[in-house]
Length: 449
Image 1: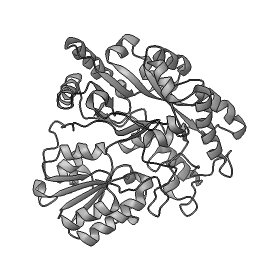
Image 2: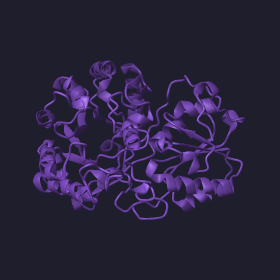
Image 3: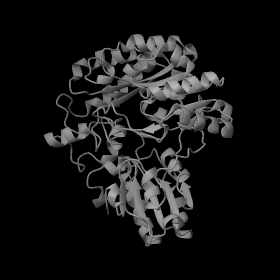
Image 4: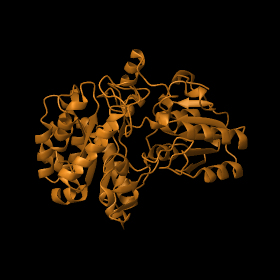
């Protein structure tokens, strides 16, 4: 097992002749099992942590393994991709086809599934090199929990190119794929037709804001670090044109932690869209201060139609929110037809049980179209996790399994003010009250549009 630096990067002896299998973790999901799946933590973004208690009004949708698809699109070796297979399908693949390299991607809660997959690979393909990456790579002592040969932290495209002896400075090839599938609401299927579905677009990974709880920022270097796949607006525009032509789409879900932070790139993209009469719609992630640095005309010109924005909580200490009236900002964005998904954290260091009613009221006053509520959770690899580790108040995994540390259940540490699991009650209350006060997200969406 190795964590070798780039100067001593491992190389596969077969280079691009190596047969590669990439796989996400196996299903089924949303059930309590011995591998770490949890019934309350389904493999659906909205149902899991946004519209969780909206019943039939909850937006149901699935997403692909975009990171693995990016890797597959940028290696010259023959490569097979299994996207969320069942355990039986994964075992069938490795027992009937021969591979030299088998890569698995997972999040930290999936460590049990990754361990099982490694075990099966050793049984059926003892000569294969097992590579494990994704958020799970930030878990301490992971090499003692899974039988992998290489654990890759951070960005995987260039890593695989170096591993296979390729030139790791060639332009990134972007996969052409829709952002979601299997969408439904009120029991009604929503068409996956390209003209009704956004394509995925990944311009960058990581976020230099480096919030202490953010595992995505931590995975790619933390505060002050990010990786651009497309440095300029011209590069990004050309990629979007290619995707538009291939999929016949006019909207993009921009999977970039803080897309608008790269302002020079964004404004150049705006120029090119204007010059070429492109009327694209963009769904983006952005911090509040960055959003406020754009004029409404610029946001509308870029086609920004949806923004996922961290609200975190009133009087928080995060730089990305300092000096910003988020209530006014959200109101202005939605008044101009830009749908907002607000994200609030419950259980910050200064939160106390007797104050949770007011804290939740502040969050739902934003009346965002969608609202995510998450518990303040230290994830391995983040500054927050390091802090709790130093202070010695993380719960041992024998007491609180890693599979339950997903932010939708309980704290995985001893909080100074919350006792006996009462945080779960407040979390569910936040979802319930947002629904009762602001109504179904579907109706909010219609109102904003």
